[in-house]
Structures are given as structure tokens and as C-alpha cells.
Figure 1 (cartoon, helix red, strand yellow):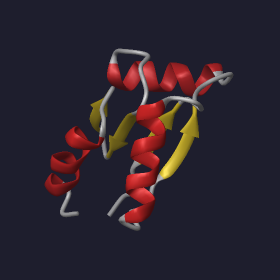
Figure 2: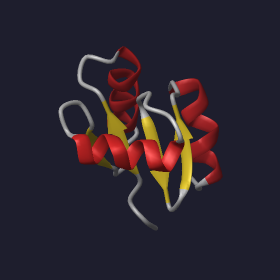
Figure 3: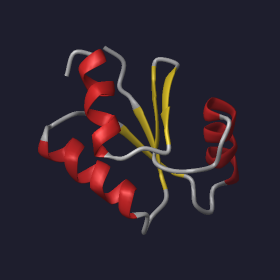
Figure 4: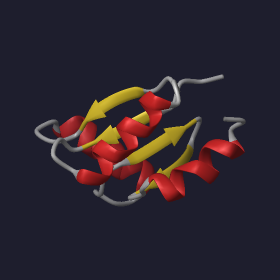
Length: 80
């Protein structure tokens, strides 16, 4: 299983909610902070076509601008 990448912006309430959820469920992920990081921001935009966070990339399947309600079915598709 590939480790999903989670793009976030510090201070974003949806990002904090998603981070808390993933940690509570012990789901591994790589956190990438896009604020102040042009390369990471561009990577997220290239993947998702937008600049809103959080955005998750799981083996090329992208969930963009989401909250926990959208994350749960996305994780279930990936067997979590």
C-alpha cells in the first residue's frame, strides 16, 4: 500500500480536522505543508486543478478541498 500524501495549510480548520481524524484512526500519511512552499503548492495544483486544502493524493487518485465527511468514503475505497 502506498502512503497517501496530504497537502495542508496551517490554520485551516478543515486541515486540522482531517489531521486529527487520520491520527485518531492511526492512518499513515505524508504531510506536505503548501503555505510558503511554491513547489508543494504547484504540485498540489497540478494534481488537483485547484489550490484549496486539504488535498489528498493516494496513488494518483485525488480528493481535493474536503472535510472528514468526504474523507471517510474515500478511505473506505482504499480499504481503511
